Length: 357
Picture 1: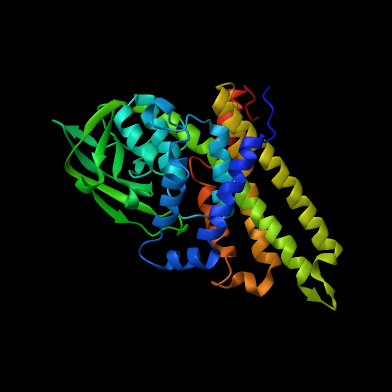
Picture 2 (picture 1 turned 135 degrees about the vertical axis):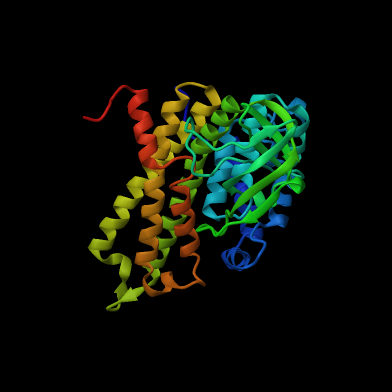
């Protein structure tokens, strides 16, 4: 079994990403973007990709990527989760990139590795690895149909679209009709993608590519959820140390100490599960089991942590100006992304031959 502790290189990467996010992704700015018609932070994405080369972490060096592993990508996602950063890292640098790696599409991989091209897999965000997904009709080189719930499609330059002939096609986003949907998580907006005779370039077989992409997305989403839960816990502890009631810090009351101690245990266990999933994706050992365990555990913990933050901040936590609502909405949306916790528990039962009575 690999060492799940963070290496010096991973800690250095964490520090660099956190510093960048501290400078470019403050809570008031994220809230302001969430209220606008352009929630994605283009300048931050450029800094992460052009400045640090993070879009190409999973792309081999011979294709102009960094040739890193899922462990490094997981560290980046932890920090992006802590900041609820409105950038398409998970959808483009992980999910779309994994689909292209399965198809061996070198030119598109080079484009995505630079970050100047953003990709989106046109599969609904709530689809679990191995589950059925909607396709469009392929007719004489053109694609026809509509797909809903596509994350970050509004900012994508290329859409990876599964068709009814079993192929995965690359479609220029300008050839599709992308209509924003009302999304709970304003920092990761969803959209409907309409195709009316759009030309598509065949990349390869859709089923293995989509399965690989969704599995990586689910596994590394746990790291984002871990970062989110860690921030909410840290922020809640800080607030309860400062907030006073009856002339003493609120955090000194035993009932609240117990709630925070329980939450700390959950967050620590989430980190272990998320690290194990990232390591399994790197080594290729017991990947399905590690990913399902991570998602089955991390999703409810992230929601619980965000709910506790809202509750323990009292009235201020209910205001739009406080970022607590961003974390709760992201946690709730993540809890159904790439499969619910229940779906992953059901899948895990089959994987380990431990069916429910």
